[in-house]
Amino acid sequence: MRSAEYARLCGGGKDEVQHAVNKWYPRALDTFGKSESRFSDLAVAYGIRRWGNAELRRMYKDDIDAQIRGLGLEVPPEGRGRNIF
Image (cartoon, rainbow, N blue to C red; front, side, top):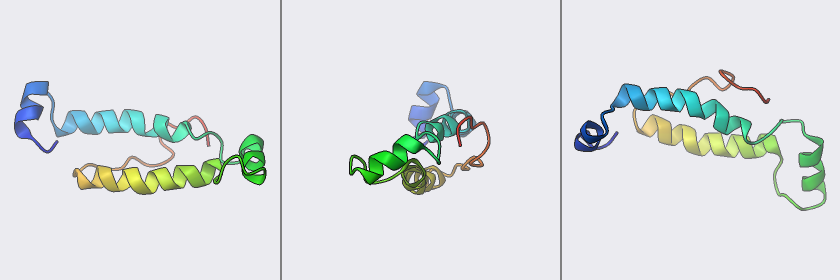
C-alpha cells in the first residue's frame, strides 16, 4: 500500500488490499470467541486471563482499525461476515 513499486510487483493495489481486509477482518474478530463466554469469565475470575473476550476484541479493534484507516482503507462493519458474537 505504501509502495507503488511493491504493489506493481505483487500485481495488486488498493482494491485488492481492501478485498483482503474485508475477507479477513471478520475472521480475525471471530478468533476472540463469544463475548459472553463462561470460560472467558472464569479465566478472568481465576486470574488466568486479565481480560475477557469482548475486552480483548475491543483492544484489537482499537489497534487494527487505526492501522487500516492509516493505510487509507475502510474498516468493514463489525457485524459483516461474523459467525461468533
